[in-house]
Length: 66
Image (cartoon, rainbow, N blue to C red):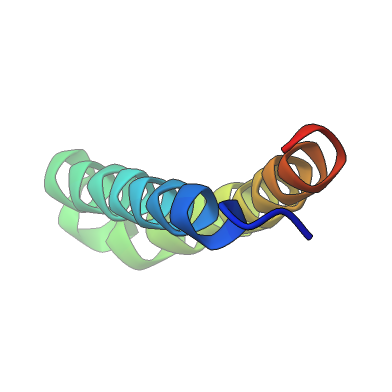
C-alpha cells in the first residue's frame, strides 16, 4: 500500500459522504411531505451502493497507481 494512501483516500470518503448528505437534504426539502420517507429510502438505495463502489474504485486506483 502506498504511503500516501490514507491522505488521499480519507478526503475522498469525506467528499462522498458530504455529497450523499447534500442529496438526501435536497430530496427531503423538495419532496412532498407524504412521500419524503419513500423518496429518501429510494435515494439511499441507489446512492449508497454507488458510493461504496466509488470508494472501492478510488482505493483500487490509489493502490495500483499510487
